[in-house]
Length: 314
Length: 314
Image 1: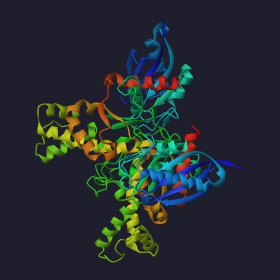
Image 2: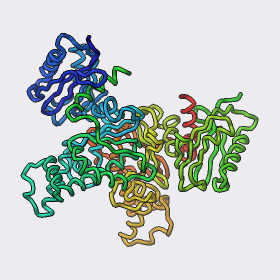
Image 3: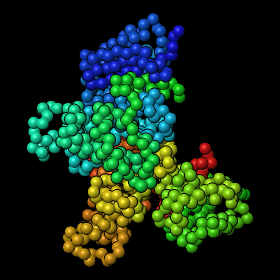
Image 4: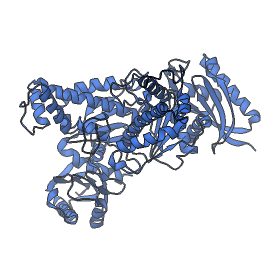
C-alpha cells in the first residue's frame, strides 16, 4: 500500500543527503550525492529530483512536500543567502526552484533550525514547549523554541548562539569579530584550547599536527590530564554561555548535539558546574541539560523532514 | 455615557500607582498610595479596591479587568515571587486576591514586561512583531517580543537581559554573580563607572557624595569630559550587550526606556557605534535602536492596562 511521505534534502558543503521519510519519522530510503560535483545550481536541482525518482521507484510513496536544510538557509525567502561554505555564491532561491520543477510545497531553513524541529518532532523534545537546541560541530549552531514554535525573528535569521560574544576581545572568529562562543565551544575551539595547553605544559608533540577533537577525546579516555583539561575549559565556557542564554527565553531544557557532544562524559561535568554557578537564582534547579536523542547520521534527514511536516500541518 | 475601561496597578517598592485606562490607552483617572504603609497585604488589597471605587465614582466607567505590574511578578502564577524590594516576603498570589474581592479578571506580570506590552499596544512598537524593550533604570529590565507575543518562557521569567553576564569576573552584582549588564548600563552602573573615572583622573570631588546619574548628565551637558566619558563607556557596553541579544531572537527594533535613556544624546553615539561594531554581519543595517515613546510618568500605568487589555482580547 502506498504511504504518505516527504522528501528531505540536507545540503552540506561536501555532500548532499536526500531521503524519503514518513510522517512518523521513519527514513524509508536515502542516498547521498556530492554537492561540489554540481557548480551549476540548475543541474544540482535536476540531479536531486532524479535521485528522488530513483528512491521512490514505482511511486511507492505519495510525496507531500520537500524540506531542505542548508547553511545560511532562510525560511522566509526560501533561499540560501551568501553561504561561505557552499559552491553557489549569492542568493539561491532553492525552495522556489524545487517547487517549480516538482509542483510540491518546499520549505528551506538552516541546518541547525531543521535539526531543532527534528528533535521536537521525532526526538527528545517531543512534548517540550520551551527549549534551546545547540549543535557543537565544526562551529556552534542553535535553534530556540518558544511556546512550541521555532524563533525565526523578523528576518528569518534568529538563533545564532555560536556568534554571541562571550569574551570581549577574545579569540578572532571567522565572522570578523572577536570572542564568539564558536571559537571556544566547537570542534575548532577545543582544538585551539588544546594547542594552547600543549604549549603551556611544554608538550608540543602530544598530538600530531592537524589533530582534531576526536584525538583529544581519545587522549582524554586514556586519562591524559591535558586533554581532560581541554574539555574542562571548553565546558566552563559553554556552561557560562548557556546560563546567559536562559535569561532571554527561559527554556525548561537545553539539548546538545553534534561532534563535541559525543565527548559528553568529559564535557558534561564542567559544563553543568559552570552552568549552575553562572545561572541567575530565579532559574536554578528548573532546567535540564541533555544530549540530543537524534542519531548524528539521521538528524539532518529527520530535520528536513520535520520542517516540511510542520509546514504541512499548519 | 459610560465607557469600557480597565484598572491598572503598578506596584513599586515605595509607591503604588492606580489608574483607570480606556481601551485606547487614555488614562481617565489615577492616584498614588504608599506601598510601604501596608505591610499587611490584605489591607493593601482592600485599600487599592477602595481607591478604585473613588477613582470610578458613580460607576462612570465599566471596568473589565485588572492589570498589575510588579517586581518579580509571574504571569503564569499571578503571584509576586520573592521580590527583594517589596515589604511582602515570599509568594504573594495577588492576581487571585484581586479577582476574589472584585470578581474581575486580573493579570499580573513584572514591570518591564508590562511596559513592553504598553509600548506594543500604545507606543512606538504598535506594528512591530519582533522587538526588544530595555529599561535602563536603577537596574536593567527587559521584555522580548517574538511574532507579536511577549516571551515568558516555561516558568514565566524570561527576558532578564540585565542579568546576562557581559564580563566574566566583572563587577559584583546584587544577584550574587559577577559582570551582569545591570552593573554597567543602569543608573547604578554609570555611577560606579563615574566614580572609577573620578579616581582615575584624580578628581574625587568633581561630584558630591551620593551623586546620581542625573548629576552626571548635568555635568556632561556642561561639557565635562569625565562625565561624557562615563556615558561613552556605558554606551559601549550597552551596545555590545544588545548586539549579542540580537543573535537570539533577531528583532527589527530595540527600544530604550527609563532614567538613563533620557541622557540619550550622550549615550546614543557610543551605543550605536559599539552595537554596529559588535553585530554579526547577517544582522547589519536592518535593526533600529530607538527611545521608547512612552512617557515615564505614564508607562507603568499604560503597561498594566496593556496586559489586561491583551488578555481580554484573547
